[in-house]
Length: 445
Image (cartoon, rainbow, N blue to C red; front, side):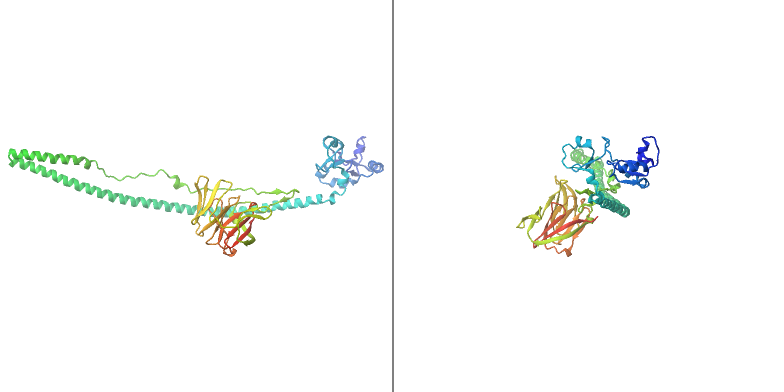
């Protein structure tokens, strides 16, 4: 742009190089003192504001780079289309804004632009956006400290896990040793029984040999024939018994397990990164919405009492602060199906999550659970459970491994038997036999 040089743009067209004294933003030209007089006297340019060239050169580069002419048609922006919020040149009106009705001269729009609310909002929006980034930065710094703390805790848990595995291996070893002793005693007892039987049979056969010698030496032929008939039967009987005694073999054998993975697997480490949800409202002002948490964590939840009243059973929230209710108490236990096609239910002294086929995903038997009767789940997977016996409200993490008491005895719940999450997911109602309790769910960032 010619205005970047401290020479008069008008004189330069005549190959005359004179230092410029002022800058005309309307003409987008630098002007020397001689041309400035003509610029003031001309009807076409007499109303153009000028700026000393020294002040113009002090402007930031991005300000001096602002083009007051249409890049497409190379004509000056003289008009403003409020429908499209865009400056226009004469040709733009004919080509792109022929059907636009709200067209105004750009001088009417920019006359008081610096005192307008739109201009002042730029500062407030940028300030707000800067504060948002600062808040997020501070939060991430806190995350670094939190991650360091979590890493230390995990290392301790790994050590505890190692000790558990060692104890488990010790128990397996002791069980095998006890099994060896038991099997050894059993085998020895069986061997003794078989040995006794073999000894008895051996003495019986020895008796046959003694009889044989006596028959050979003293018996008559007739006696020998009768004895032979009898002894043959006895020998055949012993021969039939012999295979059963001979087939018995006794030994101890160790068969090592090949399934070592279950022993060697300590667990796994998950590194989670959940994006911070930021939205712009209708005026494009940056907001951090309440009710949206940076990390889904039951430690970030707190409840603020909103209302309590007559004990009518609320089944769901409806628009305009109305509710779907039922006058009679008909549910003492509830199940809830969330977006992930999972079912949560309470029974006995435990809370269970399963899939649509009934396969258990997780189960929690926290010792504080005595008689959980009401259960529901929000869109983040946080499970809310009321216990009619302890009169407490619990929050369970999405994996069911962590539990937090959200409302303790000080909340004054009386015989709560069900809990309902509002359609906007930021409110819940606890139904009791005598009162109804309504709370706002607050996510602490």
